[in-house]
Amino acid sequence: MTGYALAKNMLSVFKLTATIRLGKKRQNEFDYRQNQITLSPAVARGTNGRSLYIAAHEAGHAIQATNTVKIAIELLHLITAVAIGIIVAFVCMLIFSTDLTEEGALLVVTTISFAIWGLVPYLLLEILLEIDATIRAKKYLQVINTWNNKARNTMLIGIANMILAQSSKILFCIYMSLLIYRLATTGV
Ligand SMILES: [Zn+2]
Image 1 (cartoon, rainbow, N blue to C red):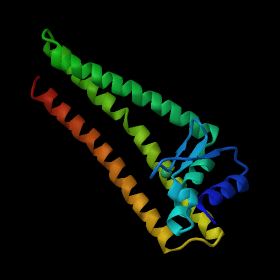
Image 2 (image 1 turned 180 degrees about the horizontal axis):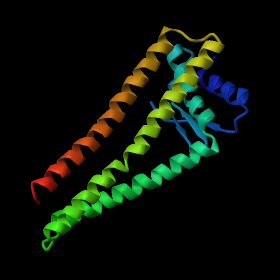
Image 3 (image 1 turned 60 degrees about the vertical axis):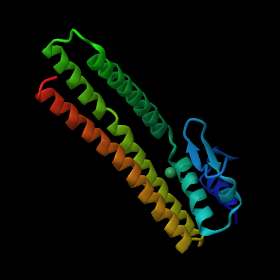
Image 4 (image 1 turned 90 degrees about the vertical axis):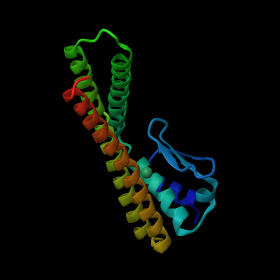
């Protein structure tokens, strides 16, 4: 069985309307807006544990994509966009404004600190969705007796990458707010 066939089977077992398309090299993802799985040529045609795990993981995202999850993603996208907008605007204000009073500067700094934390809920949702897709992929491969060492190693690499990517983003948020807090308390 190929990764493409496995993803297709999973979609039909769970009675899902998601579509599958062929992507570029290393492009394996699920698009919640388009309700579409993209598989790289290697994964789509591959029959080894790695290809099957990745295909099952992306189909796992398709299974979790209920309306509630889609609305949550859109909402947190919006909050993240607003937060980034506020951060950029207020940082510019801090850098370029020459007539900011001390109180004004403190207000700008406080707003930036709060806006930074507006990014965190989206990062946490991403972690939850990744863990959920990982569990679904493992379960499905076990049920159809295709779970093996290669599949497990691919899963572990995926988890490690996710932890590295998300925790570095969250650490960046913590670092930035500490930096801004210091700026506020030592005077701008
Ligand atoms: Zn994923």
